[in-house]
Image (cartoon, rainbow, N blue to C red; front, side, top):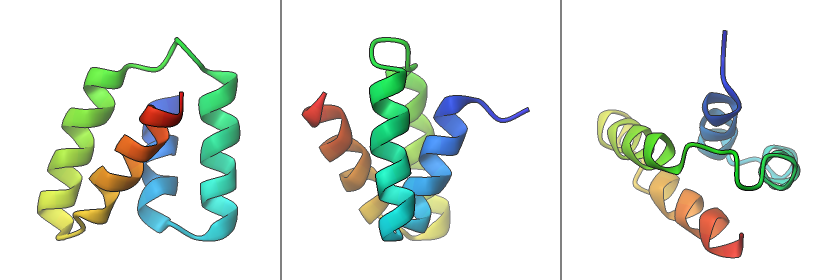
Amino acid sequence: MATAEDILLFKLLAGRPQDLADVEKLADSRRGKLDVEYLRATARRMARDLLCPELVRRLERLLAAE
């Protein structure tokens, strides 16, 4: 089963306006409960494997806004 962190990462990867809006809502609803270490490590791996460095930047912007 996908975790909130997994859903957040895949929506950040998709990057469509609705996905990014969903990410903000999800992050707000899970504030203080997200596994930030897992998010960062997985985002780095996904960005490297999928050649999508924007994923890490999107995640860091999201985390900075919290």
